[in-house]
View 1 (tube, one colour):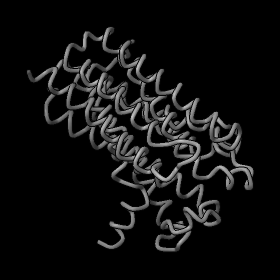
View 2 (cartoon, one colour):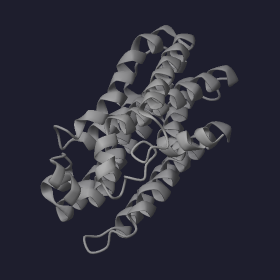
View 3 (cartoon, rainbow, N blue to C red):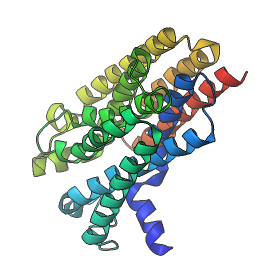
Length: 282
């Protein structure tokens, strides 16, 4: 039980609230309502396996860097509470679990599962060579809504891609803000991030731009899919939440970054899911 609790701390299991609601949204819109418990459980398992593999792999790749960063040296691997061998096996088991679950979803999901896994694992290396790592992280989470749609329909469509685009810029925006904590460390260690490259003030402006794009793509998805009143209410309130997020953080005060990062953004994803459920339930 102690090891399990340590694993959950390592992969920040609570951050599943960012991507999982979007997978359910893609699934519900693809099915035009409730797709049944069987598919719901398969999509949930696929998301948990993929995210667990990605987060554990990120911790494995970054173990030496995390050990040098005062903010992260207390994490499970650099602190020695979990071994590299255990985490490697954990990544392999979750990666295999993801592919096996996709096999039971449908043929296209299975064919695309190695591609999806490669994207979410590849992100861990991007801070070594590009400041656009935030957008790669966004791409990894953006697989969720299109994946949920494919799980139901077995094919691509334009509307879930618009929802995925919204997720890309939503994630990139809040990840740029979160990276403000490590600007000096990233510069010292030669790591790439937008804040390390252009500074705090410009990064906050860019994050606002990313979140404006998020709103525009959500609106585009709503029009393309005929999402209706309830979803549009969710989009409007989400826009207000994102505005509030940016009011929490300024160049003079970064003390509320964690509240902006986790609390506000988890409300955004859950709110949009609840409004999606209301669309099909009411």
